[in-house]
Length: 79
Image (tube, rainbow, N blue to C red; front, side, top):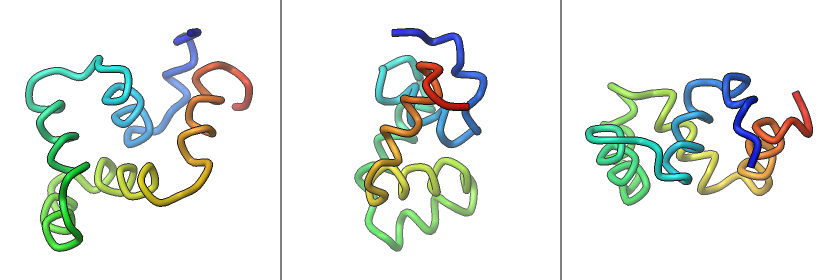
């Protein structure tokens, strides 16, 4: 996979991409797992400290096509 375009992702997209490809570490991995398992109320609490990451997790889990678009950016299919 071409990873040269990861710099074209926004902060939240990059966080999810790295979580999916297991390149996060330590706290960030734990945060991604907590966000992925959180219900609405707990995600809103996490959003107070990590708004970009919580919004990206929302998009990843609910927006059909969001993940495909992120991968397209990284692979250079779109900018």
